[in-house]
Structure formats: structure tokens, C-alpha cells
Amino acid sequence: MLADLFPFRHQLRAGTLSAVQPLPEEHWEWKPPGGIHTVKSWLWHIAETEDRLSGREPRRRAPRAGREQVLAYLAESRAATERLLQSASADDRQMYETVRRIFAHETHHRAQIYLYIRLMGLQPPRT
Image (tube, rainbow, N blue to C red; front, side):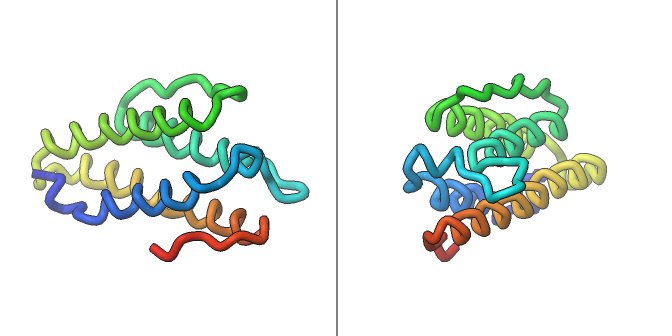
């Protein structure tokens, strides 16, 4: 099963969530001077890209979405990926590469979120 090849997937998402869940709502809307994305929009982007890469139609971006809506979308997109992991064969190279890209993408943007947290003068979690 393909899921066996990605044992770190739960720690990856846990690290992303542990960084953003303690942030007050106004920090979710913060972006650095000249920045394009906020913490909230990075999270939405992670979920919509996960949907797109796994073959699902991503949700339309919801600029007024609050914390709970964003977290729900992250959970929904990850649940779909998890179903894919549980049903795919470990020998499916194309699916392996797709899932690898999903997790590499989240790792990349999680690092950006951690940087944003530091720029806000806060300490990201040690994960």
C-alpha cells in the first residue's frame, strides 16, 4: 500500500497545524510588507493544491473564510489524500510521485509560514 511509503505524513500536517492553531485570528491575516500571501492564504493554497494534485476539483478561494473553514478544508483535502494512499499500490510510480509532490509542497509552504511567524516576533513550534 502506498501509505506505507509515507510514514511522516501525519507529523507533517501536525507540524503545520501546531504552528497556526495558537495564532490569534489577526495573525492569520498578516503578511510581510510587499508580501502576496497571508498565513491564511498559504493554508488555503496548501489544501487546494493537494486537491488539484490528487485529481479533485479544488474549492474556490474564500477570502472571507475564517479559521474553522480553512482548517476544515485542510482536513477535507488531507482525508481525500489519505483515501488515495490507502487504496493505491506501493508499485504505482505515478501515484507515488504525485503524493511526494503533495507532501513536498506542504513542507515548502509550512517553512514560509514558520518564517512569517518569526517575522511577527513569535516563536514557531519545534517540530
